[in-house]
Length: 213
Image (cartoon, helix red, strand yellow):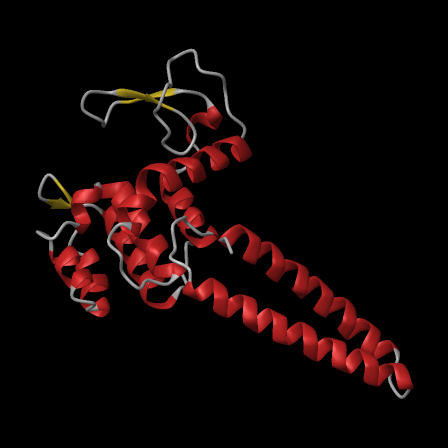
């Protein structure tokens, strides 16, 4: 079964659970209560089963937390209009949340939802594969944190030559997370924005909770 099927099935069973709990409460003290009590138990069993099946599948795409983290640091620039990113060398036309493929000065303006969808596509197509190919037993939060990392610094950040890459391959998760913090400099100088980003990625990798305020 695919991740798409399992997620859809999980969502369906959660809706069924909510409905059955509501009906169970409404039939309290009647014979129907026993019936709905069994149906609630049945739904909980299916939800647990689907979660277990999802946990066994290799992660290949970025989750909502990862997208949210990346969006918070990339920013929806110039209200969705194409702009010339002069930090890049050479400067490159960019749009939305850092999308560059096929972008020109005359590219059509994007709405925020369009830019977000484009970011998700770019992440899953261009950056998530670098993390998936590591073949590591990562959870979704760890996977998302690493995709954010390589989106910002490039896939070389998780190569076997880096401390992050070495720790990941040795399954030293805490060390890998700590070494993310090493990558907060530009031109040899610490950059506050990069320090914040590395800390957010480390927090997501270790705990799955990130304060983006």
